[in-house]
Amino acid sequence: MQPLHRPKFLLPTTFGLGHLPASGTWGSIPTVVLAGLLIAFGLGPVSSPFLYHLVLLVVLVVFSLATVLRGEETEAFFLGEDPSEVVADETAGQCIPLFALPIGMDPSFWRVSFALLLAFLAFRFFDIVKVWPANALQRIRGGWGILLDDIAAGVYALIFVQVVFALVVR
Image (tube, rainbow, N blue to C red; front, side):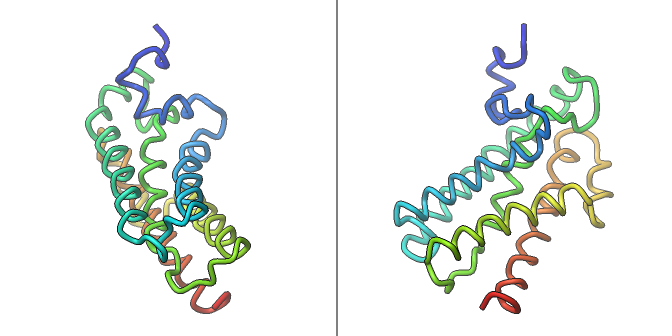
């Protein structure tokens, strides 16, 4: 039976996106799209901070739990540590830089689009490069090892976005 037909793998693979080429990138996109849609519908971090942050927190918790609770099982099924098919960790980690989009930023389409794109690119960069301690965290076995390096990448991306907006974009 293919993994897409196994409900227990739907969340770890972010509804099958983990089976696409460049799976980590595909796993990060839904969170950015969700944040963009919330902002577009007037439910962003400025206009509706409680709802915006609550939705991102739910995504972070649900996909983190899917990664941790199914980690060892997915590693066994996909025959490797931190299998590329498991992208729930990217879905969760991408929430972190989106939590702190610059609150006082001009809500224009271009500025919001730039902030979302920057958060996405920064997260992907730090997820791929694995700056310390992310490289050490990835060596932890099972679901925690799959998840924690992406949480670290999310924190690095959050800091990067804040610095860019503070020093460059204003």
